[in-house]
Image (cartoon, rainbow, N blue to C red):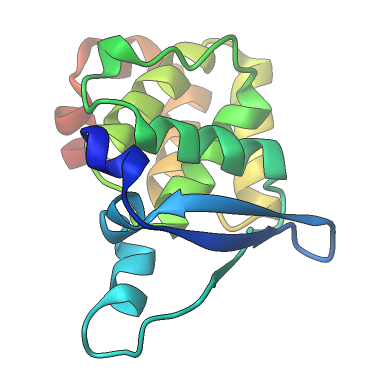
Length: 168
């Protein structure tokens, strides 16, 4: 993103869990402008907002939102961002929020790769299916659950994120 993302104008984003607590993140206008969800609000067609609001989807926590915004500040190369040791639950939440914010590559590719690696057992496939049935999950996540439950996660692991997205 460059230095201007850190030194440029920032806007407060009120992030709230569904029927839960919230926090305020001060996010670079440049970062927000790169997120389709916020870009229209920041476009010249609307008066400049003093703050933005983001209600997280059910099942998604504040820690997940904080991590995703942190990723958006990092360089676009996934080799430069350390997602840390994420469990399947947080990966599913990240995918859900990335989908809601209409994020594309490289973030979505990274999350798809991480999820394919995390869903290697029937138990993990069942947890993924449960998440998809109980929360607003992206359609590609449900298709990954179908694939994992039918025993084809090794096929998915051999595909690039772009190929997997086309297949799903």
